Length: 254
Image (cartoon, rainbow, N blue to C red):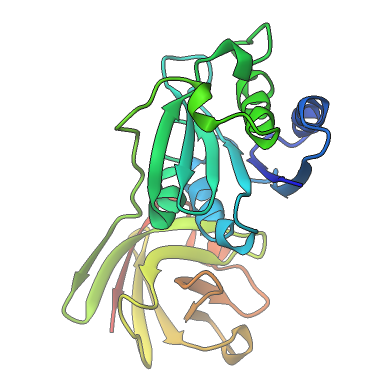
């Protein structure tokens, strides 16, 4: 049984329709909702969700991501085979951090009519291209049959710049608790003690912590479960406190 994961910004009934398409073509597939709560059109957050999640699934899992503000335009539809997984989604950078971390071995533009529904909408290609392509692959069709091979695709990088006792980076994800994941990994630098944060032009005093409970008062910085640093408040919202959002620039000084 092949697992197919779905990550979208859809909400509503759209994800359910994608599941129906997959199960009609590949009834044996195990369809797993990773999340359908990515902020609308937020490609960067979707890329982070995929990067922090894909490796926890069995080898051979097909990861489908549809956060696609360019739907219906000339952007390509991609199927990427990596060392252990397959990634399917729009060519807008959303697949690149995860697929490149695992190592892309083959890349294809989905163009074969066999890998699409008979009629392709210009506004719902999650249903008409990405779901059937994933289902065809889950049913055993070679990924190479999906279309022509490509050597280049859109890349999305989480920006950062390291200095001496400072780092400039960006917010790449905000969860429902208001914790802000930034594009700085724990492996990039080991913070200790007090940290000054400049977010949206405002300076905040923060404390390096190990757990949320260590943050008795105010703002803190800790390495989250994804290995990236998070700006957090214990039982509060760092997003509300700082006014930051995905894409906001952050400077850390220690």
